[in-house]
Image (cartoon, rainbow over all chains, first blue to last red; front, top):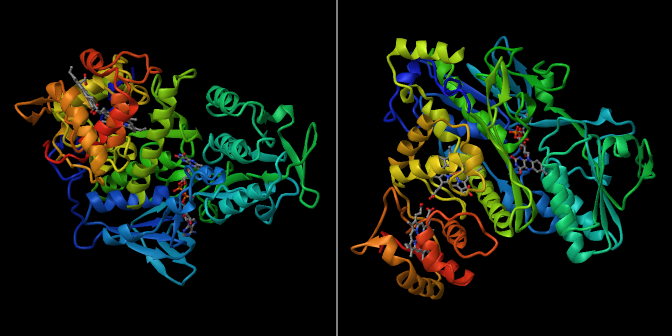
Length: 426
Length: 194
Ligand SMILES: Cc1cc2nc3c(=O)[nH]c(=O)nc-3n(C[C@H](O)[C@H](O)[C@H](O)COP(=O)(O)OP(=O)(O)OC[C@H]3O[C@@H](n4cnc5c(N)ncnc54)[C@H](O)[C@@H]3O)c2cc1C
């Protein structure tokens, strides 16, 4: 049992009744000028902040700056690799945000001045803020592996930012001969979507099972344990017997060097090569977070556990993959959960109220086949200044579950995707 | 330690435990699965908005304690307090029920109506009106995928856990998957409980 008090809201907002506005925010009295919130990055994190601010604090001016006009969601993009899904089903624009009154600016943020509280863009705009949300997602750290470089994404597609690169990987799988080997590499921790590479291996095997049954998948892993390990191992054995091999870091999975020309992945136990290779690079916070000095030596952005405000620069909140959010994994669901907390915290701060007690949750569904899914749930709260998992909360789907349950979880997973993308983009 | 601090804070503010809950934070944790405001856009996860408060509270308490089978709700609610569950039930029950928009396939719906009248109506309606009570949730206009999955628990032989209603199990366990799917489609496409 968690302590009741952890979830309580110790502050002036506590007296609010259920009747006040949709989401329980008071209207903000800020004097003449409207408060300005600027959001950098319109992915799951950034877009969701805009949504909740517009819903619950219409007095606040919200500007969302996103480089691209279209957003391709990563969750379940591994299904594009098996042919189960079209990438169009994961593609969103920002029209709903514009319609809700958010100023959507399609431009790239090139600099943030935390002292003048000013954002500059490639297109030459300068936009002032009272509160800034930085949600740029990840950047790849190509320096982490000797011989790696950005060009690698053409020959060994990471498909770790969904879109063209996912389609390229799919094409390579289609072109592969039966009896071939596809390699998925797993980078150093932490990286976005901990179960993602293992789900990918399953989706590749699903495609092979139907179209290239003599082919195999090899996972070369930097780490020693994997997310949802027992569930994945059970599922691989049951659905794709003999098709998927996982090598942990110490058992030949750790990649020391890459020879791009010869397509060799050099490990402690010798060279590996594959007909198709999805090399998922090591990761760090998005470039703009680093350029602004929001990161520490881990490469991620330290934040306050109550408000997700940067512990380095005041009035800047960092959410989603770019943040160092304690025990929370880097997932779309975490980003969305953090976005709600930030919307709540920003409104409180702008109205001079103490920070509300945050609710952090995460769920990741993994799809091993269209009728075989399982999930992990995490419940988190501030604890000693860190975001910690609540003792006894959440947990994994059981192993050895009946077929009904696996199928139901796959169906629930698809509905989760619909709801979480609608929450962020529709 | 923190409970003491909290108790003092509550006493000072003169507020009850439930009134001290951050409602905005709490109720929105459901949105990534059940849709913003409890109106789902995915066919297999149910709408919550407009269900009976007593039903919502009972079901969540049963899920939390593990007395009711769930694939995920039990894990999610384990560490939610009873007060939080009460706030959630009140919040979603106060919202308006939205009948889902679905393309009606006449043939399936007709078949489903037949199944429903023969096997379901007796329990789920009273005086020609659909029940929506603590004991029995409304079904019309709910998502078909969800209705199907719930009803399949009573039919699918691989599902061996205890059913929420043993009486319903007695009456319908012999139905085929197709009959269940048809009944689900009929109910989902039915407007106004008629
Ligand atoms: C294969 C795969 C499967 C996954 N499956 C799941 C899953 O099942 N469930 C789950 O919860 N998560 C999943 N994830 C993880 C999820 O996609 C990420 O955790 C999530 O996208 C993080 O959201 P974010 O807002 O932090 O970053 P992003 O979604 O990456 O958004 C960042 C946005 O910021 C923009 N941006 C960056 N810099 C700038 C700049 N300087 N100026 C303007 N715009 C900028 C980018 O264009 C981008 O649109 C998966 C990921 C992968 C790769």
